[in-house]
Amino acid sequence: MKEFQIKLFGLRKISFSRFEDNLILVIYTARNVKVKRISSPFVFHWRKTLAVAAGVFFMSMASLAASIVYMSRGDTHIVQEEDEKLKDSIVYSEDTNYSDPEDSSTLKISQYKVKDGDTLGEIAKEYGVSVDTICGSNKLPSYDIIHAGQVLNIPNKDGIVYKIKKGDTIQRIASNYKVNADKIAAENNLTHTTVLTAGTEIFIPDAKPQNIIAAFMWPVASRRITSSFGWRVHPIRGGRHFHSGIDIGVVFAPVRASKYGKVTYAGWMGGYGNAVVIAHPGGHKTLYGHLSRIYVRRGQYVKQGQGIAQSGNSGLSSGPHLHFEIIQNGNTVNPRKYLR
Image 1 (tube, helix red, strand yellow):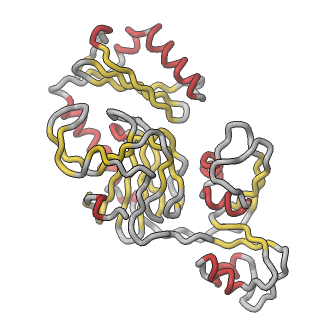
Image 2 (cartoon, one colour):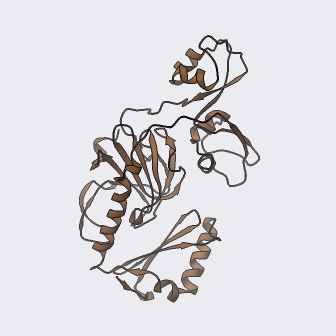
């Protein structure tokens, strides 16, 4: 690998991607792509991110360019192989296999006062629960609307805080929410014959069905596939290579879990940018790449359709989209055969 000094007349495009306090700078020239990851305590908001990026790039072009790895036509296959090795070491590791939830701790409900700029996804990630849990426990009318000053009740595990209605029984509640009646009774120190008092509250663990549909759900609202599963010419590096998933054309949109499972990886994955891996019962895994934001953490269990991230353009990407893979017992498969 060689060092490369940027020549302004060869510059085609500069792409900025933000992830937490990191700025991912991708510089496209006539023949090459340069990637730089910048960590700064000042990079907190998008506008500030752009200001910092512009200042760093234009005021200190020479020093920045000197630290960027030059990817010539002869070297791209090396970088591509390294990206695939990194991804494979994560996706095929036993650490990213599915395992059943451990015994839950004693129920504790915390209160959180919403601040300006908060989102439900960020709050859910902070407390290690799903957005469904916060919405269901607080009877929120929308997954998108919360107000500064609003106080949220947040359980320390997934489920719903439920207020008993007249005539309710444990069996009826269990049937309505499709959960085990024994789990409800055990969670609340009740018996199946306990008379429930209207107006009191109980906790219903896993109050929503894990999978709404039997098949894999589309991870984003868009159905526009910009690159299919199989052999193709790499859109940036050139050369023939095997595309192990599908690229779905979507611009900074919510990404949801395709099926119930356990988040076994959430972080940076080389050329795949910010990525999430979810392991599912039965030997399947799903991979979501090029994300701009991640709303879940490793070890968290997510329901089908639950918001896990926001699509983006991180990593080595020719434009905003979602890279989506399904791995079955250690082998990548064509997601189109599994998506409903």
